[in-house]
Image (tube, rainbow, N blue to C red; front, side, top):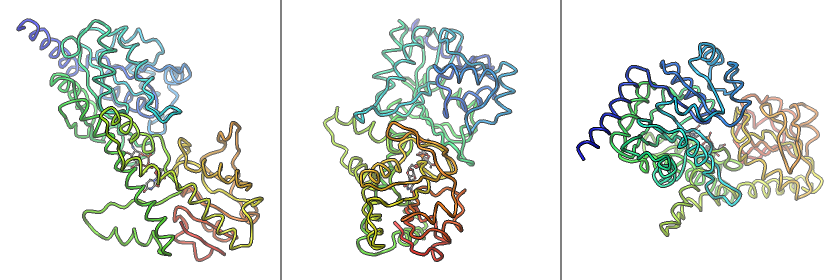
Length: 446
Ligand code: SAJ
């Protein structure tokens, strides 16, 4: 036993030394909005970095120093690749050259709204083929508690090496908020949970050598997996509450935005969330349902999470019903109406369409026989009903021809003065017109 322990201790110490001296070669699997910024930070910290991605186009762009991620500084990537501090490849055999590797691949839901961990599994299998003694593997993708130890660990141990003896394994959730000008990969605190204390130690040592933010150690990968899910479920539930308040305030003829602004005056014990046309993005609508799925294994029904999801998903119907009532007040039918949609991205000031809540609204308008024109300064075209829809420029003519202008995404780039002046009837689902609503001929607020 003593011999084994010593070997394990040697293996850990050897890796700690390589991290300390920056000799360690770092791998990053998945060069997306999480992986590429992480690769850049690790290279800037002085480590040789090998990026792995299945998309040849991404690998070529990285190797040519061409940036495609908003949060990465173009010049930094160009410099790091020209000096070969970072190189990218589709060839996983280079894992044999790597001392530590972070897995930053997507964890979406499949068509049955069940976790799709296929990217984690395929990455793990590739890494296992070239895994060698002393390596550290850290999973960063958001996933259900248990993934690292129940799913990834056996895949990696199929290499014949044992976790906690010949290699190290930990989980550390990504906390990348694309476009956030204050918090980025470098300065956002990081949570790390290893399979063994030695695994936690080496993973934390590497993050501390690279990042500025606090590195918070927890006792297991499951704790780290669960805390990440809690972070985003917290948002999902509270947005659901804001949406339920909006539905009720509408029935009671109370301005929900005024209610929330008043509640916000409480300096403790309250955090403002706002109603909207629904809940989009690749995290908040998805992550809680990784937990819902896992909870079934323990015969537990996550009632609160599912109810919040139902409320958030019901906002499309709520917006449609309100739109019908507004048109009715104008003695117009939804069927045949010309609706101008302001904003189709899932949230303001980005072009991301993933899980956009506006898409279900468009589908419902279609079904009701309405025609729609979409205006979004960040989205030129988007996929809809198997085809491609082109967005329009915001103009006086587009607005004046509308039977109803429906504001769904409150982009800063919108000319709200123009919208106020030329929208005959406006339904604002984001309270984006607060400074201009008095100038709108007929104004309705969610
Ligand atoms: N939304 C509301 N009301 C709100 C806040 C958001 O309806 O009060 C809607 C948004 O319009 C959007 C969806 O919810 O459709 C999600 O918005 P989000 O602000 O949560 O933004 P995301 O999806 O980009 O979430 C990311 C998350 N970051 C990570 O997972 C690393 C989340 O944890 C961050 O808190 C969030 O960014 C952020 O604060 O910007």
